[in-house]
Length: 261
Image 1 (cartoon, rainbow, N blue to C red):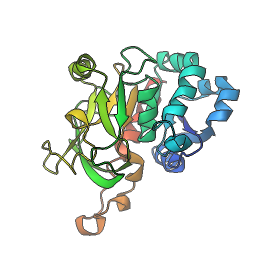
Image 2: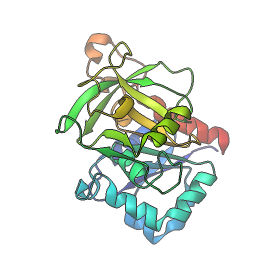
Image 3: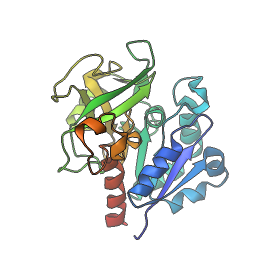
C-alpha cells in the first residue's frame, strides 16, 4: 500500500482531531477527519480506511460519563462494521477520551467484545490533571509498539477521568497474563511511583492497554501532543531530538499498514 488511509472520528466536543490528523500525516498517511453522523449515515465508508482513530476531547460534554455517549453510538450502531474492521486486521487507536470510548464500548480489554469489562473513572485527586508524565513501555504486544523503542516516554496528560479500574480481579489478572498492559506511569528513572507521577491513581499504574490481538490500543496520555521535537517542554535546555516521543505511536501504525496491506 502506497498511502495508508486513516479515519479520525470526531463528535461534538472532540478537540484533538486536527492534532491527531497532523501526527498521522507526518508519519506518511492520509488522514481524514469525519464526524460520527457522517459515518452513521454511510457505514460502508469505514471499509475505505485501515485505521480508526478516536482522538481526545470531551465528546458530548462527558455529560453521562466520559466517552459514554459516543461509546454507545459505536456499540449499538456500528457493531458489525467494527467487527469486520478488526477481523480484517485493521487498527484502532483511542487517545484520552478515545480510550474512554473504547473501554466503555467494550473494545478494550475485549475479552468479550462489546461487553464493558473495565472503566476509566475520576482521578483520585478529584481534579483535572494537566501535566507531563513518564511512561514505561511494558510490552510490545501492540502493533503500535516495537521492540527497539526506548523504554521510557515523556508525554502530557489532560483529563479528569483517567483512573483505570478493571471490573474484577479476574479481568485484571487476564490483562496482566496476556501482556495487554502497554504503558505504565513511572518516575523519571522508570520506577513505580505515586501521585503526581501516576496522575489519576490507576490500578497497577496503567496508562494504556491493548486488546488480545494487538490491533486496538487505548492510552490516556496524548502522543499527538509530542510528535515534533519543539513540543517537548525542555527542548531549549536538553536539545532537539529527531522527533517527539509520541511520534513512534503513529509511525509504527503507518508502517504496519504499509507492510500488511
